[in-house]
Amino acid sequence: MEIIQIVALSLIASILIVLIREDRPEIALQMTLVAGIIIFLRIMNQIFIVIEFLKDLSQKANIDNLYISTIFKIIGIAYIAEFGSQICKDAGSSSIASKIEFAAKILILVLSLPILMAVMNLILRILP
Amino acid sequence: MWLKMIGGTTVVISCSIIGFIIADNFKYRPKILRDLQVALSMLETEINYGHSTLPEALRSISRKCEKDVAELFVLTTNNLAVRNGFTACEAWEKALNKFYNNSYITKNDYEILIAFGKYLGFTDKKDQIKNIRLTIDNLKQQEIMALEEKQKNEKLWKYLGILSGLMIFLLLY
Amino acid sequence: MEIFRNTIRTHDIFTIILISKRGVRVDVDILFKIAAIGIVISILSKVLDEAGRKEQAQLTTLAGVVIVLMMVIQLVNQLFSSVKTLFQLY
Image (cartoon, rainbow over all chains, first blue to last red; front, top):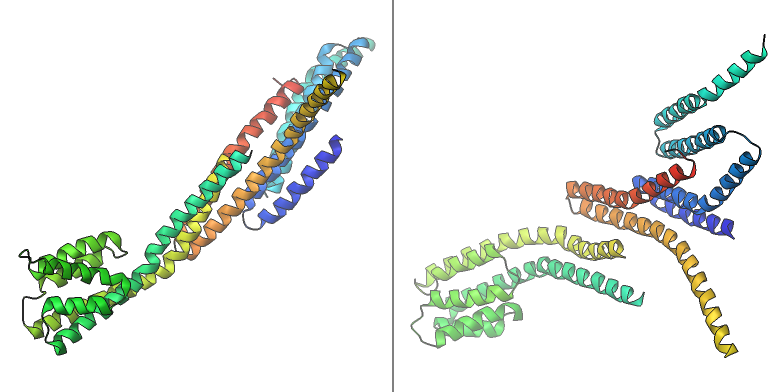
């Protein structure tokens, strides 16, 4: 079962990180980074399956491809931004972490502007 | 998999042996300097009270002193016994060159001993004894410095050997 | 003949399990490697510090971080390219 391997990996990583953190905090930080990356790469297959399923569903429901791809892009930006911001917080630079989150919010807003414009046009067309 | 383990173990062991050999340089040097001083003071006693010739004095010292410096005196005695017209100075230098290659003394000690050899067997008893005392003092100073170096460096090189072996093993694993 | 075919089939399954299990071992291996490098670097730095060569101790710390970074950067590259293809962020 995939979850057992992932939990075992994280337990081993946490124990090693506690061992190293006092003497070499910089190497402990890189170990947390590596552990996170490995877990994500393991899960990637399952994420792919879910995304394909959502794409199928959206095609069957006749939703425009633009919208669903925008949603996926927003999810991707959010995930990478949270990954980076958590690692920066672990390294002690929470100010940089909040800047990363701020940049992600702006980018997501920019990505969703066309959809907002489309909704505005729709509403304006309905109103007399 | 097993081949990797065997290769890795070989790398670690060989690197630690190199580290140990370098550490041995620092470990044995004070001892040799101490033994050289003892042998030279034995020579001084022989010259002062023994009334023997230089080759006989050197031969009896080579039998009495510690094993690691005995070789130097044995070689000098052999060079003098060959009777090829060597002066005592040349015999001492030849023996010293051979001794220097196989032993733990450094260039500084070599220079001190060469300077000792220059006055060997030339002058009278009092000057010989002064020469020997001067050399013993120089060697004592070197011994003090060598003890300091030993304390700093011996453990360092042992650890360096083992740890660099481990590091190379980890990087290539 | 039947027994022969059966043994070949179990051998195939065995190799498949072995390959998938090797995927597990590869990831944990990097973690152990980084931890071992960290421990060796900290001992080395302490020994050099005690022998009085403080600047060389600092240099070994730096070298350790650079070595681990070189190993980690490949993984980070893999992460970013997978996220790019997965969420169509290119």
